[in-house]
Image 1: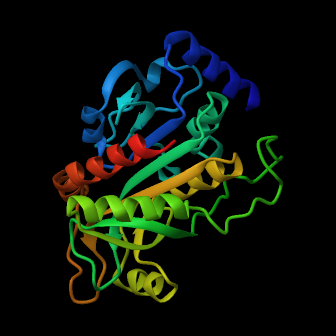
Image 2 (image 1 turned 90 degrees about the vertical axis):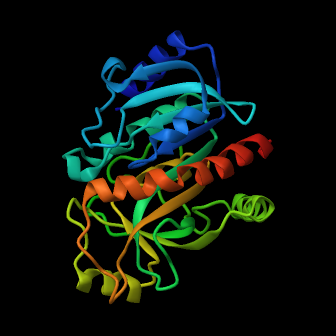
Length: 270
């Protein structure tokens, strides 16, 4: 695996002159943030050696290098999920490559079902913590030399950046909520009983991604900031049938607000 990571990183270095320190992962229906990036180079995943290929509608499947907030960035326009049949080494392979390329700052985004009764569809949830319900751990197996065997996760999401995001949201009049993200296997959406269980366990939103990427990023010493867009509600009395297309539409509607926060944060980060 390490050899493949190095091969992929070397190929990317040979195909772009940009050397960003910040990377962004764009989740379901959130690819429009890529339009905010002044693209310098873009590569379909299928063209990149050893890279998985995104199979989910709403994930364009491109690796982008460009400028955002006046800073060079790398962006994954579409991610990889355990439910697609990939193992966790494949799901988190791009995060390993990011580290090899010198990335130290990671922004993650996703569409999620809200379980907090105070949430509404279209809310931007700043992720303060997570609970991992995925059946395979991304650090299972021999330890990579990028971090300790037993990495600390007491600050999975950077508190300094959370404060920055709160300040930016206030300045720009953007409504945000905050909460704990629960990652499940998917690809089914949750039953009412599952929503209730996850809420009792301390979750505010639930989805099928993000947590493996964050774990590997933290293992490599990256700082992480995350946002969930609440695209449906798993609140008793408000649960309705939901489709992937509806999730995409809800995510699409609120993307400009998330983009505004991301852009300003990237601009301010040293």
